[in-house]
Structure formats: structure tokens, C-alpha cells
Length: 388
Image 1 (cartoon, helix red, strand yellow):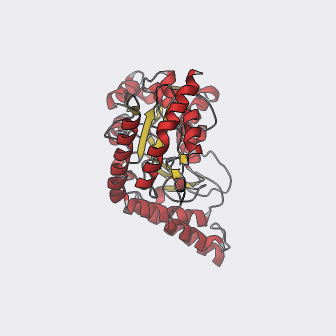
Image 2 (tube, rainbow, N blue to C red):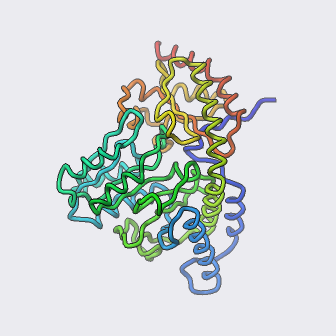
Image 3 (tube, rainbow, N blue to C red):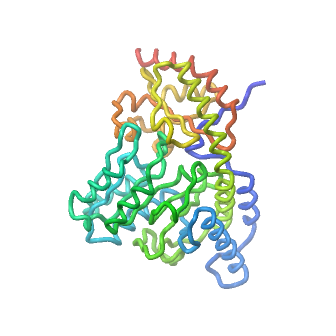
């Protein structure tokens, strides 16, 4: 009997948890707008507010700090654009060079269109921003000219975990708001908004077993970014739009389960990831493991395969029932080297010849077995294609 495909792309999206499906579907048939004053509206509002309280409790935040969005991209845009606009005439944005495009592109758009001055914070060979780098960037000019700092909690491509607490503390020494994209971190490593020192934190549902199309920007009290969406004034008048109560309920359930099971899943996925890394290295001795070898996400294994084009290798593996990624799914289909690897000092060939294998709550040793079976022939064929 043929085994099903090995799904090794949980960093792009992970299957919904049963608890999230149950919570979401329970409310799909109910009518009611959370902004309406009648009984159906009040019932929907209760679902939203109970979910808000649950998410806040799980992530070390206050309910008033939970701002619902349509996902990570909107939350990052609200943080980067909104904080920049709210802090004018400060015009500098300090952002890591390895950010997801959901944060990087808004900053670069502000530079092109809104007179922002963007500094890309350099990283070391593991993809980490050192606190001294941020401190030097802040004081390179008058610190009051810095509108905001954004450094992701954990990298979506290579899995390296950033020293968020130290970076936030440096920003706060100068009264600068600090944002972190924690989309990849929640459920994989301990995340507490209060303990992190961050002023704004992004998460999204579909990375942690919740539904697509819903996310959160945790926003510290006293911080009021300029709205990106204007309308009905929902969500502290920061993010307008009718709230998707069923999706919010599903998100809250996913956050509860992901945080509850985080320690056990961290141990399980770390062991499975280390097995995957060992096997890939045995099959391809010259393979390069990217990112920090230890201080990385438990479900992340990112490799450069010398002599291979990442896209070609991906399709060869896909044909054998192994589903993985060349990096961010948001950039899929665009044949270009990874900006993350280039920022880490990799050459163009290595940045183009890379694959990410990411594990999640449904991953098993059988998935690693499937990869092990398919990889030798796929690498051989990809290298031959590269020589032709």
C-alpha cells in the first residue's frame, strides 16, 4: 500500500487542530454581528470577547492588548506602517535584514512613498541580530529620529531564534517602540508578551493549527498606531472591519492548545528534526545546514544542496510524495535567491539551492522515512540537470 504524501511544510501552513475545527464550526451557522446591539449581536460579541480573554491569558497579555486582524500580513502592516505614521516626525525604521516580506515590504514601501529612512539591521552567519548591532544603529544618529524597530521572534526560513527581550530592552532605553513578528514562534517556543518587552507582536491562525484568514496584533496599552483600515472603528479604533467570530473562536482554541502542548511538542519535534538532519547529512555529505544549529525552532531544518536548484529539487521530491518549500510560501513561484540566506552571507548559488523541511503537530517518523527514501535519487537528478 502506497503511503500518503509526507507533508514537511508546516511553516507555510499547518493542518487545523480538531479543537479549532470544533470551535469554529460550532459558530458558523449562527447569525449576528459583534457590533450589533440586539441579542444575536451580543451573543456574537460574547464569543469574540471570550476568545480575546483566552488568547490574552495564553500569551501573557491583557485582553485590551489583543487586536484581531485578517492574519499576519495585515498585523505586520499595521505595526510597521501604523507605528511609523504615529511617530512622525521621527523618520527612521530599523528592521532586520531577514524579516518576512510581510514586515520588510511595508517598511520599504514607506521608504519609497512616505519619506521613511530604512536601516536593514545586519545579521551574523546564523541569521541573528546582535543587540550591539541594534544599539549602534539607534545611536548612529539622534535616537529620537527612530520611529520604530522590528525584529522577528524566529526566522520563517532558517528557524533561528532572535534575542527579542534584549533587543526590546535596548529600544526602550531610547523610548522607541519595538515590534516582533512571532508568527513562527507561537506554539514552538515559549512566548509571553509581557515578559518579552515587545510593544507589538504579530501572530496568525494557520501557523498554529487555527483557520486561515485570522490573526492578532498584540498591542501594548498606550500605543496607538495610525489605522491602515478605516471604517467602523472596531478593535480600539485601530483596525476597522466586521469581526469574523467563528474564525476568532477557532484561533482562540488553536492558541490554547498550541501553548498548552508547547513543551511536549518542542521535545518531540526537536528529536524528530534531529533525526531528519542526521539522515539528510548521511545521504548528502556536502549539504549545508542553515541557521543556528541549536537555538532554532524545533520543527525547522533548512539546507543548501550544492549543485542543485531548489525549485528543481522541490519538484522532484514532490513527484515522490514529499512536500516541502524553498522558503516563504508567500514568495513561491518566484525564481530568486533567498534574501535571508544572502543577508547571512551565503552566495547566490547556495541561496537558490536551498530547501526548508518544517515539522508540525501531525509529523511522524514515517514522514522522515519518506524523505529519506526519495532524497538520494532527487539530489542526483537535480545535480545532473544543473550540469546540463
